[in-house]
Image (cartoon, one colour):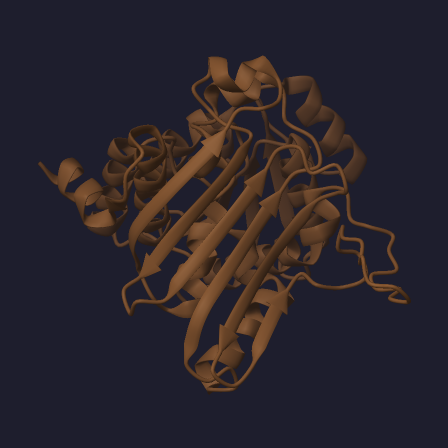
Length: 337
């Protein structure tokens, strides 16, 4: 199989290494708007690179992977769909609902295979929790708690174009709560505070976040987030049922310190960045993409899935700004007019 990859920045370069090493990928071809960067990564791997996306789509590839900048995702997905290629694209499909809906409709019309990259679906802990819930090992689900906390904030330039903490960071939580529980979020009450660098408030964003989500079966989910978690990169999910409570992300690398005397857990070293926390999940995600591209199964995360998570993010952002509970159906109705 010959795969094309657009974008070899921080995540894209790692994806290039993973795809190049994949036993079912015979050839990998790269492109990037930064031609020197594409040449550097291609040289490191001893593979081909081309000048631009048009050249890549015309290079006889069998599938197309996208790790370019967010504002390029939608057009690249549609170009690949028009070329009849199966597609992998890092989240998000687009920064706003209107474009995401347009891509969703075009993908459905074409019957295209598109896999959106929400890597937590491929993490061993989230997978085990999902299986425990579906098997009945947890009993009836009573409550969920989600945490996503970065050790340090991104740059001011990134925050200005990110779409805000709920669309950029917590959209992973919104996707994974749907995937693990098999339920839909129906209502959100969200809040936040800008207590750090001035550029958060200037962008209308926050660096500390919290939300209460209500699922369609009445289950309550609490959510916390931070851009200033000095202890390290903390991503966890707790599911409490009538038979058991399971925690995802609770191992010796979790950036916590027990206040209890004589307790040595966790022993560390603590995880400090997203890549070491999720490297296995990212690689498993690309393996699933290759399998989809080979016709061995459907998309494990569709554009529809990405849109549902975005609707929740939109509801959360509206709730934070207007200081009220927001039904997800309210957001959907606003975009269907």
